[in-house]
Length: 376
Image 1 (cartoon, rainbow, N blue to C red):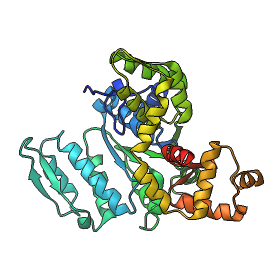
Image 2 (spheres, one colour):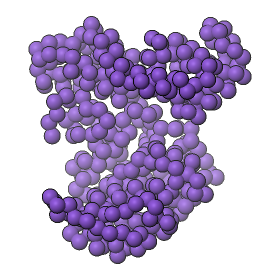
Image 3 (tube, rainbow, N blue to C red):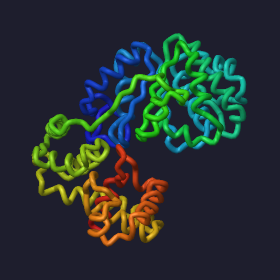
Image 4 (cartoon, rainbow, N blue to C red):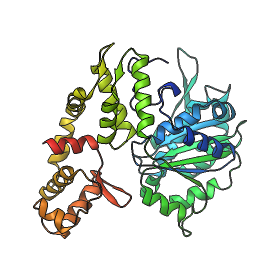
């Protein structure tokens, strides 16, 4: 598939538009081929999803395995997770296997399902609503049985896996671990961004998932690697980008892949064929990508308390992840109230998802929001 702008945002297209991750790809493929369940940890927007999709479409995995991917970041119950898995299994397998709809109904008996047929493809689609999922544990057993009977090994990737600790269904960790450990034809890739939660889940002897995975940590792509990737894509389309601009973009966004792609997408659109994008375009591109989100930023900001606003402005002004937000020097520099008041504001911002915990440090979750705060 060819695209007009090669800096693709938000979804995986093909290896042509995927930057590096050669070592991580090889490691994940090796773990899958050797029957290991994997925990993949990285900060948000560093490319966990893209890596998983890249591996799932690689020749060896695509030929030898059935793969399924679900994202549970916005889910609040086992019911929702099982519902999404049911849809993914059906929609994926019905395209591959004749009579799969009938096989699915024969195994997954806890669901009252009906099927309709696509007028163009002739393929059946499942008619299922979340309200029909009345026995999620039973349905999960049946879905896993469906995968156990598959004629190829299956790999299920669950993104933002730490979200299960917030499910209101009792001890979901124990429920899942009990069901998963008996499987012979199904492997799992658990991915997530809250490293402290995931480390507790998988490294604590008192937790159900203890010692059940191989752990992989995903860091930023190296500056020189991303610069060469960006220059290659520009040149393939009759354009070019100065290495100094690529470095400035990389440093500004701390090597976080999603922001790099978004920014380069805008720079590419501002560069005519035969031109070289240089540092002069940086501010224009930054203004354009922030401007699209101003309404959302203003709305989010208006919902904060005055102390939360003061703290966020101070963090943005410092632009330093290593500062102590409760140190006297920080409080004094930004005319903040007591450290206890800052702690309260910090807690509220974490609960609202505005701040996130990265290796014990509190950072503004959205780097574009941080830019907006800095200039506001």
